[in-house]
Length: 610
Image (cartoon, rainbow, N blue to C red):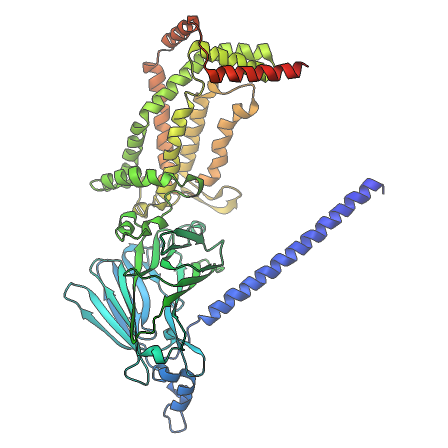
């Protein structure tokens, strides 16, 4: 074995050892993270005490009050009981409450169904809890979700609202914790007022906050679980107006140390949000997340919201809980920036959210006001957008026609200079200048269209109006259209065939073929990229909303028709050629920038000659 082989095998050995070491550390970190999440889940697991008086009974059959008082302190009377139900309901929302914990047990959005056609529930298991931590006499904390409240009678208010009051009593009648829920008519929001009366002597001295625990589990509601998990996020807005978010798949823990105005757990089309009312805010929020290995659970969040506590005898803190759709107009009506949870433009393309807010959404809402077929709305919206950019499109085609006329002369220059790209560039610029042609004339229209294309990419997958709306063969415009579900998964493509995506790709290839004369045929990248790029995007768009792929397909069809009409009946190539020849006869005037550029190119050529 020679020296090079020894070095090669040694490097391979080092790489193997490094891989094993790195993989071991990753596995250890994953185990620690799983243990942390499991401990959080265990700590928040509900402790069922329904009808459990026997566990504290003496031989005579009566509850052992001493043992109850030892474990539950002032709240011993609430340790056992039987859960009673109460329902607050309006046209859009139905909330079933339980006296165990004095909290919502199920939350149903009456106007919506899951993709499977079942009732859409934003809370539907014992995992979903709203609980406060209260002290027991033995320096331990109790979760109110495990205790039994009194009350639960539904009251009809004069303004048409409904209200229910739950009270967590102590051994002292003048000391209690009270939850008041009020549901307004036709509203997705329920007022949640927390009252702590006389508890300043029960809560440890020096404690300046009360911990409100909110555990939330998001069940599968849509067709594509992968897409749901990508959109399962925690959004929040600080008291000073800053909005931010993180995705459950990427972030397992986030400690929000600043004051928080609202905290939202967002799903693809729905959200649950806790809002501090009346200019109040949560002191800070700690959020833990988990994405279970389950085909029915999208994600889980464990949030601890710290409520500022001034130790007043009659303390209250008003909260509003939003259970509803990610509908832009509805969320915007709250006037607290809640509409920002809808991804209308993020990252480097954040600017397109203004295109959506100021142009696309108003036009879309206007059309949907009198047209109920959303496929037709998309067609009209596409025509409106193409009409909006029509002047730029026309200029692009005129520029393309001019370049087509000059192409034989450009090819001659390329043959003349061969591999000398600098000399070719100088003569090409001279040709453009003498002919009065702007080589960037076709770029501006493309740049002007880019914000629209990206805006559509953000708008359609986020529009709840398209959810479960059908058009042609697409059963749901908010998700992919599948004409064939495959029994296997094709890498980089998927396990289904989207017809709108195939049509979009086919028309993109047709456009590339029609424009083939404009590409630099001597450059393989420039020659074949217009054909390769649509194929590369095929796997990405195959999983996206059919409304989006239908829009791109329709836009491509319009482009092909416009290109044919403009070049066949509007643009006169002979006239353009004559105009170019006439421009060549005029004395060429150089701008200072062009003179400076040519001087720099000549200097570089001079250095190469030396």
